[in-house]
Image 1 (cartoon, rainbow, N blue to C red):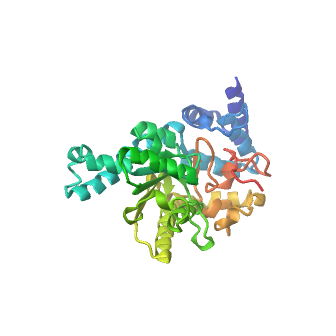
Image 2 (image 1 turned 135 degrees about the vertical axis):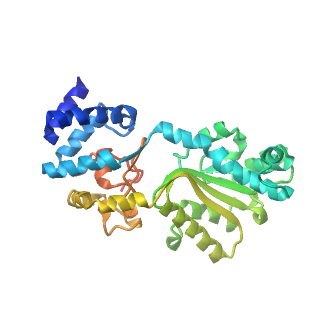
Image 3 (image 1 turned 90 degrees about the vertical axis):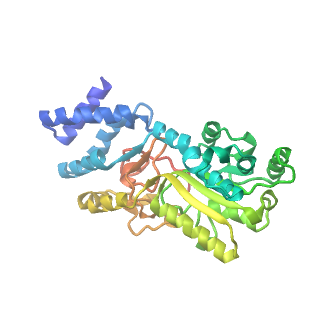
Amino acid sequence: MRDLLAEQLLARIMDWKPEEIFDERPLLQALADYKYNEYQQFSPGIRFIESLAVWLEQFGTIEEKITAYNFIRNKLIFISSEQLAYLVDIAFSDKINPILIKKSAEELNKSPYLVRTIINHPIYKKNLRQSLFIALSDGSRIDQLRRTSGLNNEQVYGTYDISAGRVSDFLKELNKDYPNCKYNTIFLIDDFTGSGKSYFRFNESKGKILKFLDSIFNKHSLYKLFDIKKLEIHVLFFIATRHALDTITDGFEQYKENLRLNFLFTVEAIQILDDSIKQEVLQDLKFINLIEKYFDNSIVDVHYKKGKYDRPYLGFDECALPLILHHNTPNNSLPIIWFPDDKKYKGLFPRISRHKE
């Protein structure tokens, strides 16, 4: 009954004829049931079709409503919990293990294609044990990664801010398996990045990864945990934009050049969002004009200003993503999609911010 009332309200708002209702209703219900009702930040009792009706009603003309509806219908990208779980499940086999196999193959002077020979060799097992897996945020799903890959619990940690006491514990446990050894490979894991700026803002000397590198190379608490001469650092996201990967890569290069360091690093993602996604959004001029008109400037706070904001209606750092993650909408997405409930305009998938003024 509730879904039926919501659908009737939506039909009235969109001024749909019976044949349009016949075409649109099955699609919307399928989207809602298959993915969109899963969104975790809906208010209690609210689901996708109710939210869509309220969201569309705020636009002043039927032309604006049609423009907004067509954008959501045709261009929205929604990553479900199941999809994200799948990316986590394949992370070790598709991205992490090939790095360890290649590293071991070079030490053994063998072809990396001799996979079975390599992974059964003690050198591979040692390289795996000397790898430390570190979460860059609480959304990294690193516990799931540990379970699906069979990693030792003593080589996985849920935060990049590692205390001096924990450093001693890591070394103690590693030395039980390999006496007098240190870690030589780091995997930094996170779920998503749209701009890369929370990991590297080199000109401000800020960012999660920059802070982590400083704790190693400035001889702070992590320095004694790693074999610096053999250290490799691999950053892996489950989902990332190409722009963000390039930003973080540039940050690493600047850091190495500035401190005259020489270590191997990689920055990768399992699911890469190509720049063409943003360009397709920008080419929809009707929608761009709409979101500029219906923009609440109160979201532009000190955190928002860490990215480009000449066109703040395109989202943080003007990423212009039509992206929803099942647990929350990233601020790199278009604000008209994620405005919180306390703003002038309503978001279709309201976002919960990690930052509070």
